[in-house]
Length: 135
Image 1 (cartoon, one colour):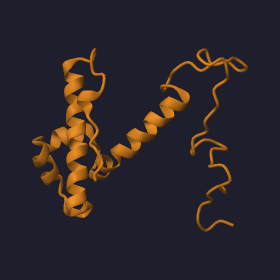
Image 2 (cartoon, rainbow, N blue to C red; image 1 turned 90 degrees about the horizontal axis):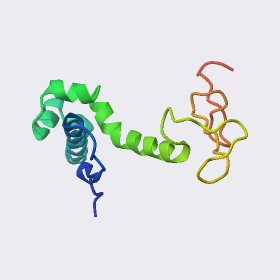
Image 3 (cartoon, rainbow, N blue to C red; image 1 turned 60 degrees about the vertical axis):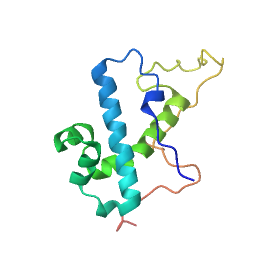
Image 4 (cartoon, one colour; image 1 turned 45 degrees about the vertical axis):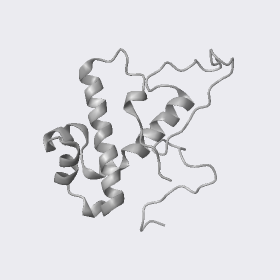
């Protein structure tokens, strides 16, 4: 009983230029291969050469897509959170309703989501994190 891989072909890619569709497919192939290899051999047991060979891309292509092996390993988690936040607050850069204004679809105001790096952006009930060595 495994996790089904994300299917880029099932996404609505219509309207995207061929180059962008190919980039998305290459990115997804790298993520899928990385997760499979990491599961089989462990993170430290997978070299960048082995990952690139599995997808049949060069290291140059890999580094155009990801900054490191750690980056490709964290991609599914980052994608999940990006999709969650987009669903919660709308796409990045989208116009937010004016103060006191309502959400045009539901007739109510959207909540303001504080991210951890923003002032006051801690988890509810969690104590703020203080640097080590400071009292």
